[in-house]
Length: 310
Image (cartoon, rainbow, N blue to C red; front, top):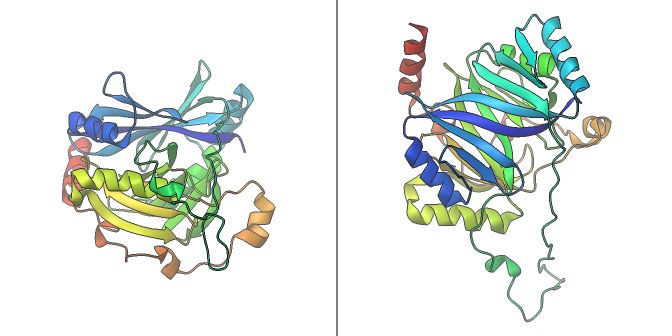
């Protein structure tokens, strides 16, 4: 595929100062309070002030100028306005009003965390020692992995991402949710229905389940009301997960052990097993809270979008 990287998101929030403090607690770094870096991904979040929370833009990476030309051709074929200037292609998804910026970027390279085998019945590779998982403590997540976006036109947004930008389907339930990928991650963008556009959640890759636990626990120690959903393991994507709420009202997921897809044919023939609606939530863990379906601030979001339309 032409795309190979989810580089960054640009978000608007009513209180950028509180948002910046939260990212500092997460371990992201910043020189100016508006751009935030992860250890592996570089600059991954751009924060600006806005009257209500919204996802303003998404930055994607391709290998070359030829890839940009290919996507520009796709956009032309579906009649989508776009600009291609100075090695950057810019277009707007019409239903969510998200601005996509696409440019050539190097492929993501990540160091491999030190692995250790757990003790299990009949197998005790760790003897007379505590598990290394109890020691590292909280640390920054490695990188931004995926986002989930609410849209008033599920089919329209889905088709734009697939037909115009070149995303691929990993799993989906028609008119409910689509898990789309532009890398080898199981999904980089998921689409859900909503009355108005909104950023439902954005997710950060951790080394392992202990990394997830240490980081979430650190943030909950400061404010227990941040807890939203978890701890558990998704069926779709297979990843461990823990969701917290950021100061703007969007959900932040910390995850590890995500499905990876580097052979489309093998995924479709072997990996992509049948799923039902009961699998949309978790393989195990707490039941999905209602605010994951209808945001608590939906009236604020509706009022905000209505004001932009006037």
